[in-house]
Image 1 (cartoon, rainbow, N blue to C red):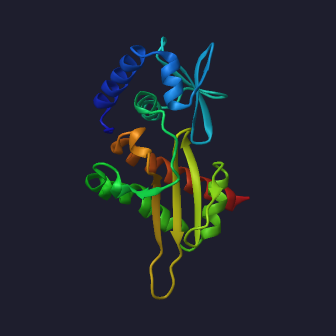
Image 2 (cartoon, one colour):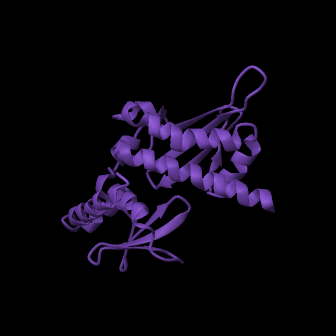
Length: 207
């Protein structure tokens, strides 16, 4: 999903038109969204959203409408999600379809910022992840699994540096991730994930 405003508008228009041509129950089943009289309720990161397809509206429950960038990712998930449960098998970003093509940007916007912030502070990563309802995983020096969408999970694994080795971070996706979103959107999710974790760590450090 490109940053260009015109492409974003086109992406939103296409997604809404695709959703309007589908059965609401089928969308809910594929995405694990909750269908109510008001529309679809869907979790995205640690917030809940209401999607009213006929009115082309996405509303953050307890808040305002999300920015168009978030809205597009939510709609793309509803369009693409398959009725496939996570396997628990983890793969790297490069293993996603076209992952090598997007990896440079993914590393710059997702991995590098987390190395800078958490490279020698694994506990801060765990604490920041728990604010996003993340679950600690026994991997590396610290790891946390975070639910992005009901069928899409991401795990951040940190190895702290020492005198001989630099710190490193890996971001792992469930092997089914490619069924639910295109890789370009997955790269955007990584950037959002990194920003949220760093923001949470900064908030906690001030307490």
